[in-house]
Amino acid sequence: MKEKRFEKAEFAAWLGIGGNLLLAAMKGIVGYFANSKALIADALHSASDVAGSFAVLIGLRVSQTPPDKDHPYGHGKAENIAAIIVSVLLFLVGVEVGISSIQSFFSEISPKVPKAMAIYAVIVSIIVKEAMFQYKYRLGKKINSQAIIANAWEHRSDVLSSFAALIGIIGAIIGGKYGIYWLVYADPLAGAVVSLLIMKTAYDIGKESMSNTMDRVLQDEEAKKLILEVEKVMGVLHVDELFAREHGHYLIVDVKIGVNPKMTVEQGHQIGKEVKRKLIKKFSNVKDVFVHINPYHSKYPYHQSSDKPKVLQ
View (cartoon, helix red, strand yellow):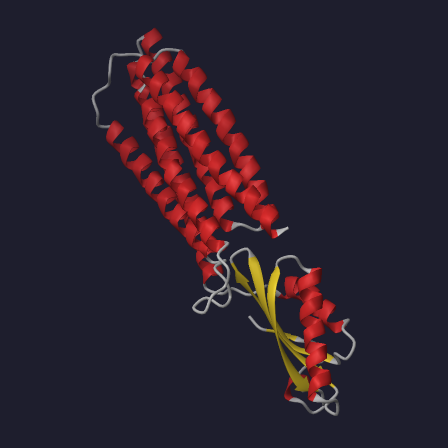
């Protein structure tokens, strides 16, 4: 199951690298022959996305590295780090698009009008990029990979920049046909709006990835599923405390359970092993479970305030 997850994620990363290279080459060549600066700039944007896809690929491979002495919980957070890198790259792209758009307002209007073939190239790019976004976003959600989700939003940013380029190209063609050359400013205006959207997306991705990197735990509603499963284990009289830390695409669970205080250490140990076995078997995203055994008693501090298990946050 875990191997299939990695294979799917790695395929998505390579798809992004290959797709971006092909689109960058296509838009660059067509942009040159169609005399479209907007399309050439869009080609550079697609080329820059290759770096993000490589960051995701490296993050995915590092996350597969087995636990070692220095990293006993594994390397799952490598995916979160890759997502942060992608968010930074995405933010820089947004800044670059914004600066370029603002500078265009003060540039001299070019008398050369782009050719219609540029429109077709942009439309193809938008369709391909949106398809890549939908595929990666859904895959990222399915396999719980922040890196793949971040990479998906990179493709969506390319869709937005291509849309801005499309507006600019159409504006320039119409302006050239009817002698309304100021219409070329439709491109930088759309680009300025797109740059804000790209930076907002980058901020949201970075914020989410940073939160996951800082050992965020599952919320009560999500943790409740784990608690209910622990309560089913024979010998568990009470779940005193439980929190599940997000460690990249998997969870590390810490749980404290109350058992009969008169049972032997061996018996308590066996109950703890069963709790761990059951959680790992039931939930595919649970990689490891640490169980602490408490003697159950009505006067035990955990039971004075509430009969419900406590979920740390």
